[in-house]
Length: 636
Image (cartoon, rainbow, N blue to C red; front, side):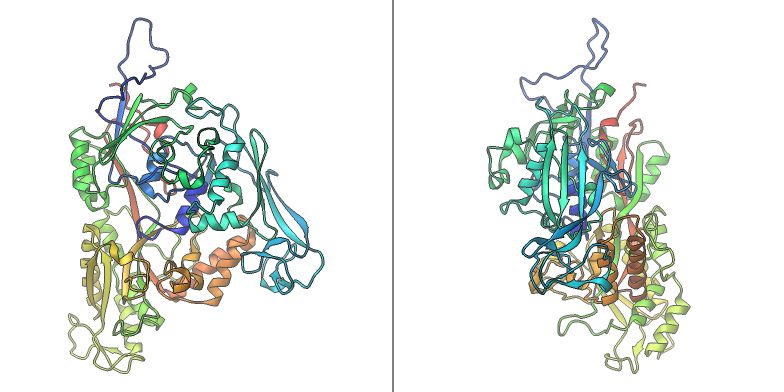
């Protein structure tokens, strides 16, 4: 999700198909008539008071409907009522309510050869659902790259087809006591496939690539891909169960606004939503039908999710005052890292930090709209020079407390699929200035504190000053980082002007600064999923009128070799040589062409009272409350 703060293709696909979500506590009263469960094994004659936990969030969900288009706040709250069904942890997937994840090795997934005939629906060579008719290009069985693509001329042909079986754990119940079955997952697939459901782009592709999603028995569902759809996400192509017994009489359109789906959805997880006071809090109670209740989980009887706004200082003060037990990552804590580290050293709070799949970066506009900018960023040497002259490590050390890292490309260095051999651009002013001299950017006044001047630079008028203009949404962190960047760039004779704006820069139309490509350079963040997000920089993702100005590649970078490597990676199965080699190749091409400079990995963080246990930040978990059921405050 490019910190186009709330929407992204890779992120929504990973989270909506492997949904992992989160929870809370508080001090307000329980809805009248509610019977709270008591602690197990309470000694006879002893009444233990209900235990309560408060989690404070910086953002309130607009809806809790799985297909209602929610972002991080929605996923966080839903983690309280759903658990899994599949968690994304440490760059891999872990089954929660499934017996195991299907793979080719354990025979849960089967790649078979399928005879298809004229008129059958397939995935064509472009990776799109299409009817097999004369002239359509397709990949015959065993074909893994463009060298063996065939053109259909009639008759029966053989193609590869994936078939994947998912088995639920037995005994699962909805919080109302009804059995959770494979049919609930099929119902979820039906809802996501409805034309009245605004499914995100990643899910739309998954739906279009499906030939069948069917219940085999009460615990078993089978996904069959269209012939030719070799989907690397096959092992978690499981639709999050939704309660047919409770919602089945409502249409897909009605579920977009119904209270039962948007305000008080039932689940199978640790808590049950009791009430939602808009703008204030959501109150929940322990779910007696939680499948891990026999383990004594969750530890708290009531849970309050309080909405306190995004201000990091306020988040810290509410924690220190005891109003909150946990402050989650929807509060902008990254502006307060130094203060948080100091308070942690004094044992006034505990902080959980990790870098994840999100990164901040500087996009160059390689093909700007007419009249935009005086510099020509199409020369890769200029982009490389800027990279060498940006002291990105200093930003990590000074503004991020040394908790982050400078990435080499769009894949975090801790990801198993990171290519460590890509081109690197450490802070090196000598290399940067040498490149500027080659291009024709001269230090005519011999004053390193002033920008260089164009003398014979291709596409730039002589006398033009070398000044990088960059636009970004204003935050304290970005303002502090901009000061460092401006100082380091000037060491090379590069001027730097940072312009701060608001989220209006993300308006998806021809007049939008970002997607209308009305910028010189722009800085923002993106959150991807577990798999490397090479698709962000493909030609197809350049924002145009055809894609509604919503493409993820506003740089205008277009490289056929890169497109091919990314496409081949997406059509190969994880673990295979083709999958790994093409992921590596796409990263190599990106780093050599540098359409965007990765600045730093953003820091995921939450803070909590010092004695809370179970708060674990994971680099790829969808929320910091993925382990909510294990949160506890031991008695002193």
